[in-house]
Image 1: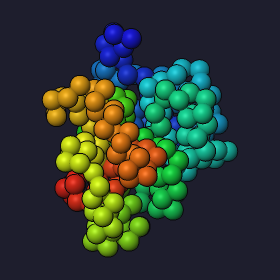
Image 2: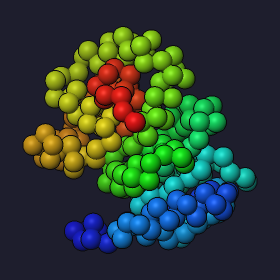
Image 3: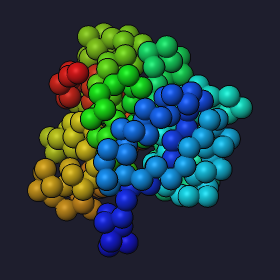
Length: 225
């Protein structure tokens, strides 16, 4: 366990478009600490590759034949819970993005986004964080009524949090892992986990992505990108 971070970060990539896979693979290959251990062109093949290789991250296109990314993510979460599923999306996937929020995806990345964003997102979820492309986060908020419309509701939900819990939630919204939050706030990681348990319970959210969206809506995370 102690030398796990010295090993390459293993990733399985799934997209039914060969050109997209090649582009994403090239971006990931630019980081010597990331190793793409398998590629699939549909969700069922992706699940089998994850079961075989047990990577830290599975990058999944939302729309794929035989089994879409949401269904694949659900199977991966059940069969290989240590693998974090990240959805590759386009702005044409609005309905599926909204559905995916309730399915426990660890992140959302735009296929057309900045390559640095892709690398940052993969590393964030590999370390236990949640990552949303800023443009995806804004789009999700627009789908749910817009930041201005949702802001008062979100801030009301956050009213019961302590100052430290709000600090932790803001950093979750920024995509930081527990270890990174601990370093930023000068806490031990176990304390961060305790704060997160409390935050999730108070806000009635099931995962980091749902918490991150709420942080965006409440204005804890400044709009970027």
